Length: 628
Figure (cartoon, rainbow, N blue to C red):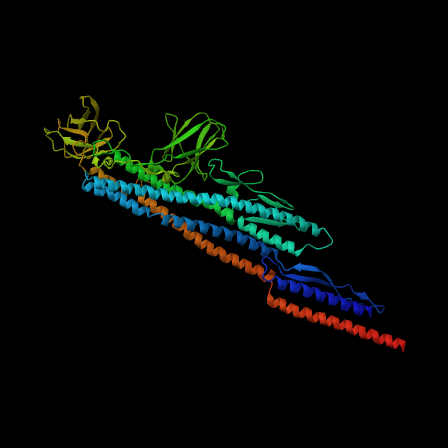
């Protein structure tokens, strides 16, 4: 009789536990991070009767468990990391696209600028046309400046977001470590670990994965160890290891991420918001800044060079219209030597959109891109080095391990300004002119004289080219001294003092030609036409791209980045939703299922109560029989 009663009571307790757990599940159906709970129960130990039969003794509730699949949970963490990274990248790319489109059409203002020289060529002495051309130059510079400012603003924002992400990561890892300690303590006690602690920890880990890609492993005491995907430990049992933020070794305005030992691990981080911020800054924003700057340098260099090949309205050699910053050179804060490095641009067409590291190792200087690609350098007679369109001048003594970051174009767009203030300074006329001697007997005539080196100090000197025979010539200075001699062949040019003279026809012995400053041709439009033609001159990328082409390439590059980022974001969001759906199919609370369980446990409770009632009736009958 006592067995019947105890069995009924155990069933009653089990049903009551089921009702309690089911009610709790229903109460938390909308609670974020809650995992469905189930009653864990076993059949009680059987007893053997005197007749040798085994009889059940009821049911034992062993605890409450979580309906969880760690593989599915880990898949959600991984998918969340990828989704947050893709979303962050997409947001940044969208901002960049908006900045480019919202800060003025650079291609349009460039077209207007070049067209201004065409207008000058129509009337080189018209001051109003010249003023309009300078106004167009200012519009170009302002557009470059504005775009550069937008990129710089995004860089500042990324630095702030990196700091914020690191702070959030440290807060999360600290909380997870605390929960690890509590979970391990409960696992070591007679009671089982609290499901609410496990739910809370899982939620924090998922949030952590949204900031940075992680790997996890569960320890024997129930604690969770967490590391970045590159192996940097973030949590080990009850200890968290904080990340830090420090200034870049070259550029103090840029934030890098360090591990708990203070070592820069920025390049090792991937996944999540933090990984996306670092990757975007290095691979997209820096490239966009450099491409924009390269375009600005191409514009300033080509226009200034062509200006120097002409004469302004005062008869002076043309001065610069634009000014632009030289390549930036930043010494590593860890340098031990006293060497100072400066860089200058020697070949605009040789420049690229890369940044470089110049390092001193084992007594020699070496150059490589920031991506690690080695770049060959030529040592010049004066001790300087040339590479990638630049010349590096070095003074002082370097120590092994010293290094310098070279950014050839990063600051160019922001520094581009119009240095010319007087519209008369636009050099519309060609700098030099040539004429044939009045007594020439041959058929040779001046075809063209072009400036090949506007920096030559003797460019505007008056010289004469005299043919001593039909194939030999000598170049005489104003004092009739011989400057140079040469052999003439039809179709070849005659060069001296930074100019090249081209002839048509056949010269005779005694023929002469005079080359001098174009002081009598200030209304000449030759150089204005050459300035306008720069719109189609391939002055960049080893002579394969115009300035307008470079802007178009930047627009295309940013557009492609944005398109790829949007597509990837859509894909990763779908994958994340699928992972959550799979995980929730196991761990989520189903109202229909819980309602069914509620009925089941209610019926079980009532049935066990009936058993108790039956046991009571039998017991009363037995007592009555004994009394009778």
